[in-house]
Amino acid sequence: MKKQSINACILRTAGTNCDLETENALLDLGIQVSRIHIKELIKKNNLLDYNLLVLPGGFSYSDYVRAGAIWAKEIISHFKKDINLFLDEGRPIIGICNGFQVLVETGLLPDIPNLSFSPQATVTTNASSRFECRWVSNDDFLYIKNVNKGKCVFTKKIDSGSLLKMPIAHGEGRISFLKDKEQKYITKLEENDQLVFRFVDKNGDFPNQKYPVNPNGSIYDITGICNDDGTVFGLMPHPERAYYGWQLPDWTRMENVPIYGDGKLLFDSVVDYISKKF
Image (cartoon, rainbow, N blue to C red; front, top):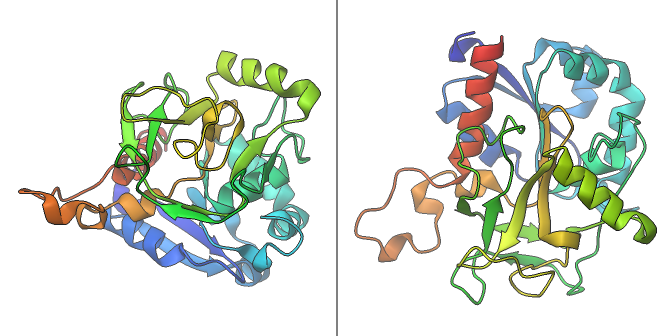
């Protein structure tokens, strides 16, 4: 499939506020992008017209019950069958920040052991009990490490072990499992190569949930996971806010500002995957 034929759906709803940045990033890659409200998608009932589904960041329905919960129920109630077909055909889905919260609430992530459409984890209030919105930590940047060994289709162009710079902006980003199943889930995620991003310091060392290197207190410093097929990916950092070089917080101190930031690698990876698979 040629890039020009790829059609991405950026779904939005009341409270979504990162859809335009995400649209600009995907358009820069030369693919077709439809930024569509869920009410319109329900009316048209054409989810299967798209090759990529994006759930962007924001505060869907004001996180009224808990982050992503209402939107997740709405999506599953209208599109459960189509999403199953979407995934059976290997079409990718990404959830960014609030979108990640939605994917967890639907049960699409972490997807252990099988797709269940019921939550197996939670993305809950930050351990700091406050909204965390920043690039900068004690070590100049908030770093994440790609720990995926190759399963995730959104990180194919990122070497395993690479450190990336992306901003966060969330009040509920702490990934948690049931206390009596924490180790079971972490072990299974590692064995299945479903862990994708973890928080690290500038030396690439894991903070073991210590603030501020781990800004939300997520178990095992996890901030990005994929499903067992590698086609559903959720992350708390915002790649669309790290797509261009001028979005980097230190660009004014650079002699040569890069055209692109680390966020582009994720979108590049999935577009390349779609081009080759379809």
